[in-house]
Image (cartoon, rainbow, N blue to C red; front, side, top):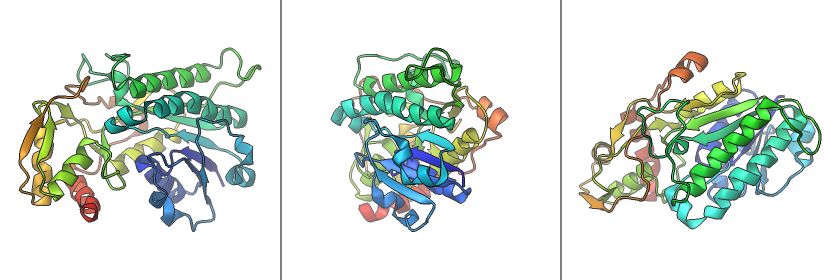
Amino acid sequence: MKHVIVTGGAGFIGSHLCEALLGRGYAVTCIDNYVTGNRENVAHLERRQEFFVEEYDVSVPLACDSLAGVREHGLFGVLHFACPASPVDFERIPFEILKVDSFGTFHALDWALRHRARFVLASTSEIYGDPLTHPQTEDYWGNVNTIGPRACYDETKRFAEACVSAAARGKGTWSGRPYPALNGGMVRIFNTYGPRMRPDDGRVVSEFCMQALRNQPITLHGDGKQTRSFCYVSDLVDGIIRYFESELREPVNLGNPNEFTMIELAEKIREHTGSKSALTHLPGREDDPRRRQPEITRARKLLDWELRVPLDEGLKRTVEYFRPFA
């Protein structure tokens, strides 16, 4: 079987990715240290012989040849998705984030280079910062505050992209010797939502859903007119796998090309929950982007990728996931 490693595989996106890869016939090793991931997210997969779970921090060196999945099947691909990605994590565990996207990226690249495996980095729309162009294309270099509260995430993602790009050029030496150019690249993930999000992760969809289900005030940071583009997790994972199974090395945006204000999102969630929650305003968050919308021509053209799940349908599924937590 073709065997792949998914770092951060017990997280929100990572667990859906593990599930989808198994469905496509891959053997999968999920690596996670459960800082923000949850083993329950992959518990339903553990009865499958071709699924392996390893509790480990990829910021620390690991000889991947010691992993059961690699010993049994070799290594066909590495998908590096280990990284806390929530605003509450930026303040709570900034150094863990810095380490996993720097040291962790080096270690994941080392596995791919040693085995000549396909590599995909989970990058982010955060590399565009508070964009000065709209919508954001892959050739936009971004407008990022390098010393702001989000820098622990967006700057190390930019660093990780530089690492992958350098490895793909195949110049210099790796571990003191020449190496074949990396067969890999990156997907830039825009706001994604769906089941297995953490109820307390501070991201806007989970926060609004939990507040609405509890009939608490829905808190808008700032005027609520800032926009985001929300992609349902199954659509995102489809795009990731299409990229993984391609030979692309350039970055590709994956996200919903339709943008919504925070007020519009709050109103939709109130409708789907039947909540009586009032909308209230808090001070805006520092460096919070005013607009965020991907230009996805590259994904459409090169991956034949389109969104299938409308926002209302995705929110309906997500609200039902969160209901027991309320």
